Image (tube, rainbow, N blue to C red; front, side):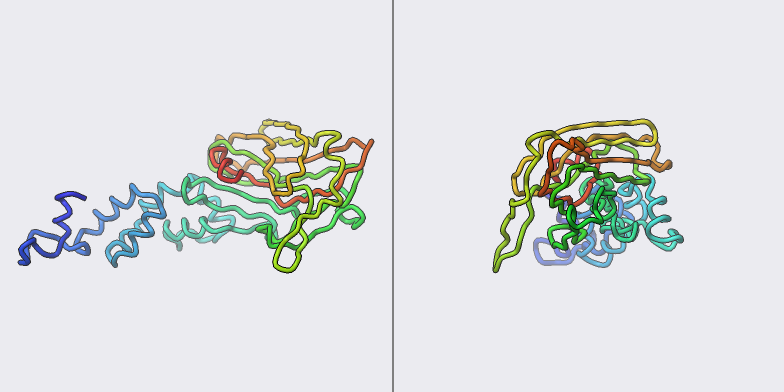
Length: 284
């Protein structure tokens, strides 16, 4: 802070009080708020713990207005409260920074604290999976590996078809959609987890196909062979762009392998992730 730090010191260097020097708590709240507005949310929260003046300044609406998504009022109205005027901007930010569940708890979104971008996750239970009701083919398995505490596990099938859709108000920007998959499943042993690969087969013969379409005509297709790494992997389906944050974006997406010349099995499906494209690396 250099020589100017003496302005915030309660005493002079010779031990006598100096009337021109301010204590930290005597800085005008408006000045503190202006300084805080240039900081990232985690830094603001740390400084808010210093004293009452900083805590009061940190709640100023203009600080948080610039850090909220441009269309945050849609998210507040639809998922938090019908009376947004009762919430301060800092309260809105705090609520959105935590996972907000919807669609019977099978989908949730949250505000990335570092970038302010909106991320969204869709549970396997919110997907339409061919054969999911026949336990010869699929099972839902409870697990603490998933944020939704459940994954879909494929025993064996000829026709793999997994579809999903979403209607959501995304802020303007470019987004990526990814499937979170793994070959094999973990089984618990005393004090450890063991990967079970017994049912894994058929994924090295033909690639799976991922597809994404949006209501405004955007389209993406990608293909890949699933590799038996024993770990969760995010598979990039494609990207889409949102230009108008005040119009909801309708998305349809799928994972298929419908070559009926061979069976495939041992696939675990956790969820589908949608996030700003510049955040993909933080997940993968």
